[in-house]
Length: 403
Ligand SMILES: *Cc1c(COP(=O)(O)O)cnc(C)c1O
Image 1 (cartoon, rainbow, N blue to C red):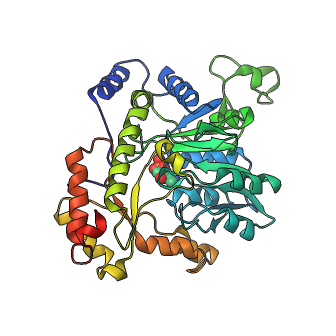
Image 2 (image 1 turned 90 degrees about the vertical axis):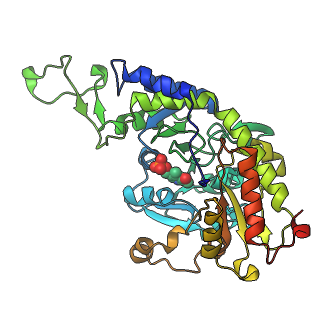
Image 3 (image 1 turned 180 degrees about the horizontal axis):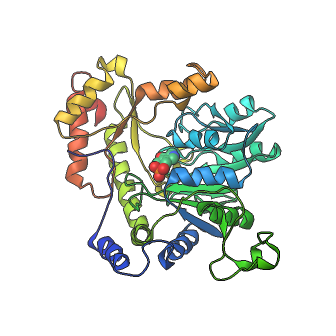
């Protein structure tokens, strides 16, 4: 059975993890900083702070940007729950912008049209790896004094065009903070893990502080306990300056991350090859729409986290569940990403959101199906997927239409 996404682990990865397991530090050791530095270098940013998962990175991003009660945070409705939940976690109001019907990313037009005076942050998501229109989004946000936090969980290793040059996602000037996830379905993995990336030193310092309980050990930064003469600040001493969390990642997870990072470009190159094969196979199929980028030149610079088709199920006379079941019987796993977040029961109950709020995201949800895409897929695997889709749709698709 081919799953829709899968990790890519080598013997070298395993050896790197084992080496840390045999060392003195399983956590708060030197490998964490090494991974952070390598990741910051890779994306071209000044600071990278590794955390326990991508959700924690988003949560910290809003905290360090000072977002809280009374603030509105806009994100795309076509995303995973975490892109919106982080706003609720800091006491702000999560709100949703509809997607662009071509790129399936947060629409700048919709953002401008829905902007409200209390909007303090925008979280664009690079859905499936295809970059959102960061320039337009940053222009709208900055003109209104809001921060831009890019949820780059799908776009590790991808690039955008910025100032006429290709810049890595996380290393361009249109996001104030970028967040990444290293869950096993993402382009590289730590098992669980996340990264907050920024050029802003104050944001970075606050993120490090909040990652470990808001606790300070550097005596130069401490203020004392108001114990008078008994106020001794010896080697044991620590102070808590903000209410923080335990969002730490372990050294052995970072060892896996470092090893994966060294092969990331190679892994993404394979994803691009598979995407090119799929695009070729499905480009002329009636009732099927292949994924598009705003800028076709970015095809070879996109990380391709997912390969999603849009299928007109009513036109092919078959429900998505039926098609998924047929494909599964042929050994092909598929997935549906995403249910528009504003339609989730908790969001409807808590904020009064309802269907019709983001019509393009709702339409997209009804048509989308993600096919298997991961670097260890062989050419035979790719052929099996293509032939299985043809076979399942053979009653409506003639081969000549597709080939
Ligand atoms: C995976 C993902 C997250 C959450 O990352 P975790 O590491 O699972 O916490 C957030 N946003 C998007 C778009 C994701 O795909």
